[in-house]
Structures are given as structure tokens and as C-alpha cells.
Image (cartoon, rainbow, N blue to C red; front, side, top):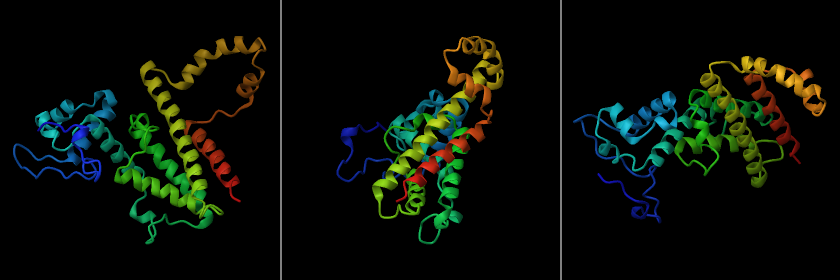
Length: 258
């Protein structure tokens, strides 16, 4: 099957979107295939080799089918990446046990900080399991079902911040600040993990190696604030640093309550 071009999609109904396009009829030979199987194989490849290790041809090889069979399920690599992102969002979106019958997270009005900490923790865990995931954030919003469920959960919690209900612009701005912190901080943490692997030494070993140079630079006296911070600041683990920065963001959100 030849992939359709963008001009072949129905822009009025959105029928060209992968989320609304039905899968081909089930075939038992030469082997079962589904979007779920395709995405699962692609995620495994990305976990092992990064995004550069993902291609339609490689996914087809893992599934032991011809590449052209995949085009009945995904038309472009961009669609495949979008499906992969949504698969990770399934690990972030709240489970049924976390949601009230009304559809919003099951928390008290004053428990919004705890709920945002839980959402942030799921983001961090997913990003560290799938390091390629953070590379695909920051562009256009992701609109898959799991991505929307995760966004709904965060917005619903923020809607419950005292003074935020009925102020959608404030909720949206707070959500933007919250997610910008997650994306930025996790990007740094993932990059550090990747550097440790590529260099074959831990971040602590790197700091020890750079120590003599930094001592010489700071003794010159041109960077007194850096010198004071490096001398007196606590040395936090990545998890502690993530949590401390998150509390600053939550403090900022709380300060916006009228």
C-alpha cells in the first residue's frame, strides 16, 4: 500500500488523523499485525538505540513482516513517533484508581500540590525509562488519547487550586510553567545520564576531574557568586534537585492565587 500524502487527507473531518483512521482488517497470515504491535516494537528500538534507531524498515524487520504492510497502520515516520509518544503518556496519565466518578483527579482542594508532585513523578519516571521521549516534547501539543488524558489530569488539578476555578487563562499559564519545568529539568537530567554512558564516567567523577581547573579559575576572583555557591550549596542527587525545583514552581503557582 502506498502511503497517502497530506493532500489526500480530509481536512474538514480530520479523517486523515491516525487517531481517527481505522486499522486494516485483521489478517492472520503471514502474521498478525496491529498498531499496538508496531508501536511496541518501535518503543523497544528507541529504548535501545534512541530515535535514530527507529525506522519503518527496522520495525518491520523486528515484526518479521514486509515494510509495506506497516503503511496500512502508519503512513509516515512522523505518525509512528506520535504514536510512540502517546504510548509513553499512557504511563503518565492517571489510572482509574486516581480519578473520581466525575472524571477529575481524586484529591482534596488543598491537596493540589501533592497531586502535581505525583504527576511530575510519573513524568520523570517515564522520561528516565524512555530517554528519547523528552526529545519529542516542546513542539506542537500532542493530541493522542493518552496525551490528552495526562493534560486533562494536570489542568483539572490546577483548576482546583484555591482561586483558580473559573479563571482558564490563569490555569493555562500555570500549566505552561509546570510543564516547561518538567521538560527543561528532565532534558538536563537525561543529557547527563547520556554523557555518563558515552564518556564512561559518572557526573561525580567528571566534577572531580574538573575540580582543579575550577579552583584556579575561581581563585582569580572574577566569579565571586559562583565561588560562594559552589562552596556552600548542598550537593543534591538528581531526584532531590528535581523535587526542590518543583517546589519552587508550586510555590510560584500558589502565589498567583487571588
